[in-house]
Length: 239
Image (cartoon, rainbow, N blue to C red; front, side):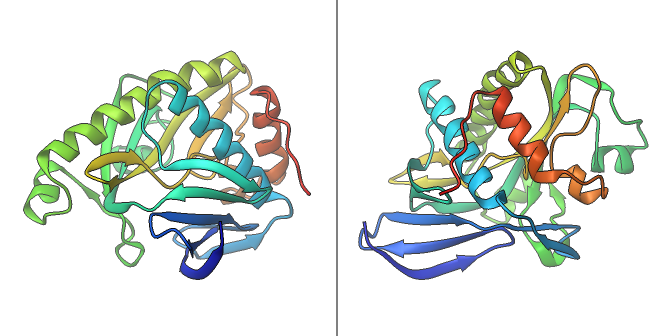
């Protein structure tokens, strides 16, 4: 697989075209950002950790029958993925109250949410990724009703798989965001699943093991990511 031109550079990943028009290479960089890019830092090993963490999670989800764009790892910090026509909304599921839902609704952090909440957010950094609903998505043509239904169903399937996976490792899956795209007419899970895009707490101590350590200046960000991986049986390679 020949790596060609940079197609896109985000906050923590770069995406490259290949000699296959239907395949892309995702490069996970060491860059870390929060608050819509206002806080930035490069953290050693982070790109490799997130790439390998994502690969392990995507393989678990594929084994559970969830269609994903991930195909295989190419190196410590690169993966081969299908080229999706991305749907410009994020799907967020919350199992425990934390982050923006506490600020928006005035609820305390740490409440178990039963049933879990589901929210859509428009992917637009300039607007601060505002929350939207099914009607906005339909009116502005961001996705069809069928695609919306598929994204919701797949997001909750992911929740069923990963809540138990992390619980088995002594962790709570507090919340997470997913992105989807279309490949040959099929809705697939895209982007990544790593501690950058979810909240994970130790089940007993409620110690934060995710990017909130960076947002809140707690330190030990990559070390926390590595601890999560260790509990899931991921052996990281940094070469």
